[in-house]
Length: 452
Image (cartoon, rainbow, N blue to C red; front, top):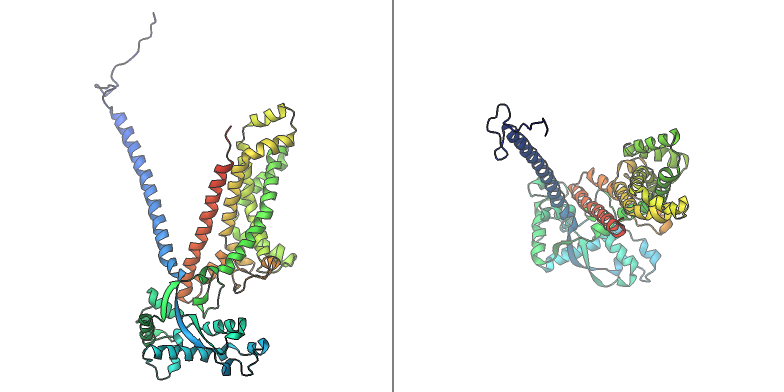
């Protein structure tokens, strides 16, 4: 027997307390829990709303950049204007500048309009040439220089329309807006509408936006992001080749071999601090060390890769150390217990088990570096117009180039609305790259994941 008596009576102030009836306190607790769930759902809904709004804005403004308006007309490459000597000498042909090809293209456009019965509402018929891009003469010239045997023949060309005409068919330019435009007027749009009806002009998919090069501010319809994509590729090769081995080696030493003393504590604190340093600080460091002291070429992907390597190293080191620390100590003890050395236990047992986290952290660090603009701003990759593809591998690393985020920044600050459209299109391509890298990180993590 015991003198203890359980008090199962009703709580004070609640005479009807029972397991089958909610007390006032229980009701308040359940109400608080329901409010907390509602707050969580509202937070998730708010986040999803802004995410959807962002995606709609990006797709709505960027998808038109993947389409372009083209004019398809036959161009007579008259020998009297392009090769007066008639010997097809490449050196003599190169002496004919784009100014010599411009009247050839204009005459071809006028002839095509007349052949379709389209009225030219200008006192000077050549004024209709404003419908075409300023780059069409160079396009025809490059084609002739690549194949001189075309001279004397009539060749069908697919030429770019001007950015204003292209914007008109995309809804970016209105007739009212042209009243303040010195480059085009409503009569040009009338001709453009007639050309669309006749099949001479069409808005189709523009592969040159993805694979082409940047252009000057006067030719936005010709601009592409392809060369900048190559620049980003070479930068990522530098980052991967340097940041991965250095970061993983430093992590293994700090986590597995380094003694725990004030010096290693100082190093760990500094690595954590470096991960929080603004990226533009690394750009200043790269400008001072790699360009002003080491005299490496400005605007080169090699320098950009070195700067981004410094920025990515702390992220890789922290994620790698976390992956190594997640491996149970029993794995190490078991390896040492059967006679393995410290290095064998690390490289044969611990490192393979930590590999999914290491690869995930590395790819996330590379994705972060791919989207950085501020460090590239200070080493000159923003102001450079990426107009030519590199000649080779060495040229890809050393010659001046741009990168995708730098190219997007450059387009966004230009005055022509067509470049603003291309900036949104570049964001779509950059997001596709980032999503691809994150998907690869998830797949690699699942592929190499081991359970113990």
